[in-house]
Structure formats: structure tokens, C-alpha cells
Image 1: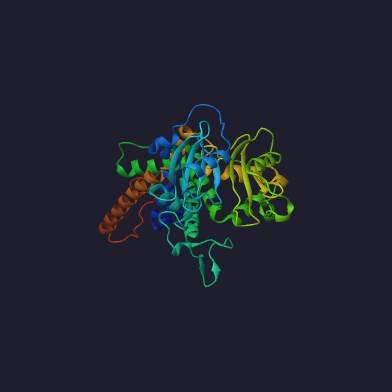
Image 2: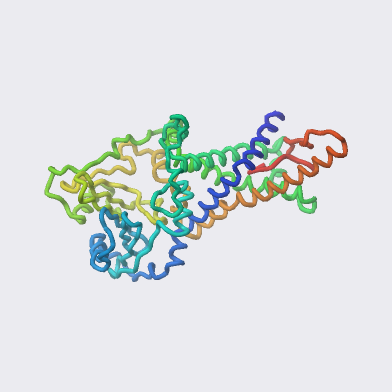
Length: 428
């Protein structure tokens, strides 16, 4: 057991030092994105000065306002979202977003969410700098993550940016698991593992702070690690998830849809919305609609609704029911969540996992908890580095005094390190 703990301690320590900077960059960039909607509201207040009252404007009317007042705004293949008191008309060609007050019909202005500092941070955290057209795009990282034909993303056909993000998620999970094992007190003395000794020197103070902060943050870090890995390696994570829970992943066929040109004369946006409503629970609120690409005969309307608990309600893109609508016949097909396999575990994977990762299921006040836990790698890095430096110095002094030693004095597996203790990392 002692040798196992020593091995785990070394894995924890060198994993932290070897890829710790990468992990900090990924985690801290994610923390910045948690309040991204609120940051935009503060930095662009005029875009959010909406009239009081219920929604009166339909998305088609908002689109007409943008086309009338901004003739240069490219709305080809556009999508229209209901977001914080306004319909947002997106331009896929330029990345610009026009906001139209959903009560008064006033054009509030435009914003470019694909360029600038926040766009760079989003590209870094969500795409590993591989989202083309966004600030910070790196062409090399967008290439397939392969070495001599071997897919490093294990059949997920990911790129180098996604591979790096997957590695950071796996590293975080390893640090969480090894940190918990190292932290676990012998003899069930759990109170000792949560005690911070003050006035006992810098080493013990930093060591204990590291243990306590790591233990408290462990559940949140574990969830972020698992959901982050799932974004990049879905075949492996979803395969394991559905192997141990009831239900199964949605078949690929449920996401396959094309409009059939010979199936009807064509439907308007408002008709498509009406047709889509018939495929979702009554009382669902319209969240967004994507307009078909005129030049693509098989393109379709994609309509999203919010019903019940919309776990994406507080993000920029709400909606928890997705429906495809044939642009010619009006035939509707609900594809999200998977209606053919509606179990509790499926609902968690489809509706909750990603939202928990991003914090979009709650308002800004409780989302401060996401920020607080997301910042814990900073004090963990500081306290872990301080204890490691002190340990190394004491080791050198002991070797110099004794003329021998392996550079690792003390019991690396001890829950109470004394003057010289266990190496540190998350939860150590």
C-alpha cells in the first residue's frame, strides 16, 4: 500500500508540474466564459436596453427589421434566437449579431461575437484555437490529430486542438483521483485531513491549505474533467456511460434530415414554427429558428423550444427541444432530446451534462459558485509549488548534512508530513 501511495504521489506531482500550465490555461479560460453573457451586457449596455412587456414580435418580423434597416447585413442561412429581451439575428457569413427588441421592434444595434478578446478566449477553451473565423484561429491545430495514420482521438476524428483539450481533461481527472487517494487519511481520521495548522511554519500551512482546498473543490473539478473529456472523446465517454446506466445513445439516423423538394409548395417561417410546435409538448416557448439556405435544396428549418427546465436558459443560446421542419411540406421531426429513448440517464447526458459544465442552467448569482470553484486550481498551484520548493530545499540540506539521501526525505505516504511531507498537487 505504501509503495502504491508513493507511486500515486509521484504521478500526481509530475503530472501537475509537467502539464500544469496547460491545465491552468484551459480551466481559467473556462472561468472567464462562465459570466460571458453578463460581461457582454455590461460592456454593451445599449444592446440590452429593451422595453418592458411580453414578447410581441415574431422572429420573422425581427428578421424583416434587420433586412430593412441594415441592408448590408448578410442574413443568408441566418438563425434567429430569443435572448434576454431581444431577437438576435445572426449572420453566419460575418459572425455579426443584430439585436431587435422583441417588444418594441426597435433595432438595438449589432455586435461581433467571433472577434475580440472574449472570442479568443472562447476559441481557446471550446475549440483549442481551431474554430475558423474566430479570433486566435491556428491552422495547424485544426489538422487531424494523427501520427502515421493513427487517430490520437481514438476514432473521434478530432484535430490537434481538440486532442490538447482532451489531454487537459484527462490530466485533471488523474489529478483528482490521485489527489483523493493521497489525501485519504489512514485510520479514518477525516477531521485531520480537513484541518489547517496555523503557526506551524510555511510548509504545514501551505500543505494543509492544499489538502483542504483540493478536497472541497474535488467534486466540481471531477465533473468538469468528465464533461470536458466527453466534449472531445464522446465515443469513449458515452460508451462507458451507457454501458453502466439504463438507456442508449441516440442513433445517428435521428439527426439525419433533408427537405424533399417535391413534397410541397413550401412553408413560411411562421408556418414552420406552427408545424414544429406540434412535435413538442404543449406550452413550449419558442427559443430560436434557423432559416434554410436558399441555394441548398435539401436545407430545412431548425426550430428550438424551451419547455420545463431549460438547462441552457441562461446562456446565449437557450432551448432544450430541437425540431427539424421540411421547408416544402412542413413535416416536423423532433430530434433533441431523443424521443425514442427518453430515460432519466439519457436526459442527463443530453440536457444536463453540458449545461452543468458551462453553468447555463442558473442565473448569474448562483453561477458565481462556478467561478469560485473554477479558480481553485490557482491556489492549488501556488500551495503545491510552495510545499514542493520547501521540500526540495530541506532534502538538499539533509543530503548535504548526511552526505547521502535520495532527495525524497520523509514519508511520502504520510497524512501528517511533519517538517518534510508528501509532494503536493490537487487534493494532496
